[in-house]
Length: 468
Image (tube, rainbow, N blue to C red; front, side, top):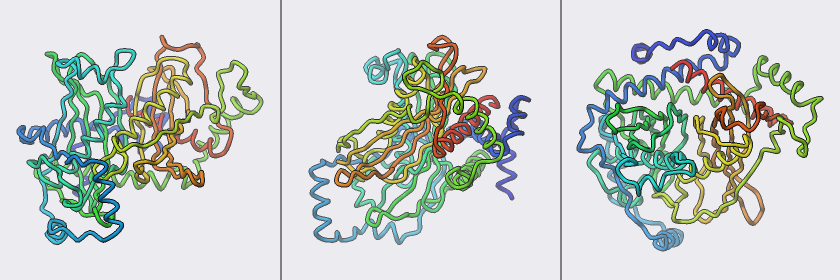
C-alpha cells in the first residue's frame, strides 16, 4: 500500500488530450498501458536528475572493465572444462555463502560522454551518410553501459577491473529492453552523455534506467532518449539464476524510482500474459482488423508487378545471414547483445527505407526479448518484416518493423529463435515519394496477429508522446 501511495505521489498526473481520451476509451487494452507508460517516462527523467546529484562525481566514469582474454585461450579453457570438472574457486565459495551486502542506489550511477563536439575523429565513427548519428551504434553503447552498471552494482562503485568470470563466479546478461523513446534527434554538434543506474532489484534481476542527453555548447542539457533495460545475474558454473545485492533507498526520489522499477517489472509480466500469442484479440480489435481487410485486402487483389499503395505483409520480408565471429563476444564468450541490437536496427532501417521509398527517421524501440544466447561461430539469420503502417498529424508515415534473429543448425537446416526486436520509424512529408502512403496488409492469421501487435505498439507510442 505504501509503495502505491508513494508511486502515485511522485508520478506527475498525466492529462491526455480529448482526442487521445476518445481513442483510449474505445481500446481498454491500450488505456492503462498508455497512462502508466507516460507516467513512467516522465517520472524516470525527473527522478534520475535528482538521484544523480547524490552520486559521487569521482565514480561517475568508473566502471568494471573486462579483462582481455584471447579467443585461443577461451577455446583451450573450454576444452579443459570438458575433460575435467574445474575445482571451485575460494572466491566463488565466499560469495555464495556470505550474505549479500545491500548497495546504495546512487552508487551504481555511471555515465559515458561521447565527445562529438570536441573530437572530429569520434564523430567520424558515428556519423551516417546523411550527416546524422548512427543510432545502431548508440544502442550498442547503451547495452554495454547497462551491463557495466549491473556489474558496478554487484562489485561496488570503486571496482575498475571485472577480472575473470570464473573467478567472480557470476555473469550478467540482458533479458529484455522495454522501450527506448526518442524525444528529439541527437545533435552532432554537441557532446552526448549516456547515463544510467540500477533502479530496482529482484532476487536475480535488475531494472536499469538509461538516459541519453545532448550536453554542452552553452545550452541547457536536453534529454534525447529514455529507456529501460532488464538484466539478470547467472552463476558462472551452473548458469542458473544467482542472487544480486539488494538496494538501499533513503530519499523520496530513490523510493519512487524503486517502486517504479517494481511496477515496471510487474507490468511486463502482465503484458506477457495478455499477449496475442497467449489470448485472442478483443472484439474491437477483431472488428477493426476485419474492416481493414475488407477495404485493403479482399476485393482489392495486390499484385507485386503492379504499382499500388497496398503491399502484402509477406512480401516485405528481407533477411540477412551472418557468421558470428569471436571479435564480437562478451565476457562469457557469447555474442554481445548490443552487437545484435545494432545488426537488427540496421536491417530494420533498411527495410523501412525500402518500404517507404525514401529517408526515414528513428522514433522508438518498442521492445526486445532475449530468448537465448547466440554462440560464437554460429550462423545467424536476421529476418525483417513491415508489421504495421499508420499516420498521424505529426508524422504522415509511421512504420512499425519487426526483426527476428534465429540461429541456424547447418546440419539439419532447423532454426531456433534467439531474439525478437520491434522498432518504429517515421517519414516526413518532404521525403515522401508519393502523396498516398503505402499500406501493409496481412494475408494469414499469424500475420494478422502481428498486424494487431504493431497497431498496439504504434498507438501506445503515439499516445505517450502526446501526453508528455
